[in-house]
Image (tube, rainbow, N blue to C red; front, side):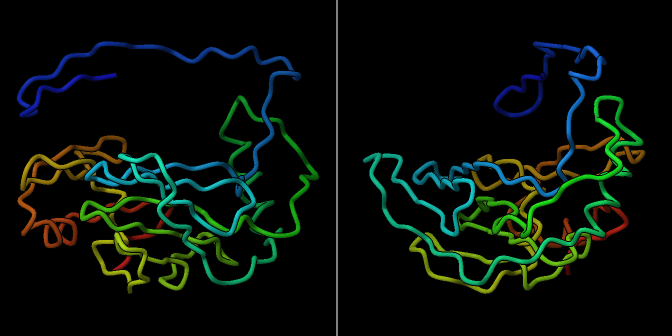
Length: 214
């Protein structure tokens, strides 16, 4: 864990740890490549809190000031039938690389994918929602929804779809991640807000053989 000063000019390592797990069979983990879980996001202006509960098809928006529910955002569409071929491939791949995962030759999968894959607050205080698709390894703009601070549905833009790279704001400056000298390293850059889109386009990050959406 690293602590940065307000202007990012100084840093200090304040904690280091190493995971140690007993590798007896009873301690091994079952890997679920499309696990449903509760999620929470806070808007960049710290005014709103977004909550997703397991199994739900909506997102609860709460005012950080009043602690009251402001609105419930309904996510349109129907659950997607689980792609078991994809699931088996992911389980086999992950299990072969992880010493903490149980080698399951006949994994059991749910009938449907969870409805929501992730929720994410954007740097300009909107909410990005990604739903699960039939082929989760393919990035499709159809799986993304964007909502304004008032809850209005919007068409996602390039910057909204890459909001995972934006890590914070310092006044009119944006903290954004960039690939370092090799695939295992990332740098945190300070970019003028007006130059953010061109910076991300010129510094793409590729994961799982996929480039960022354009």
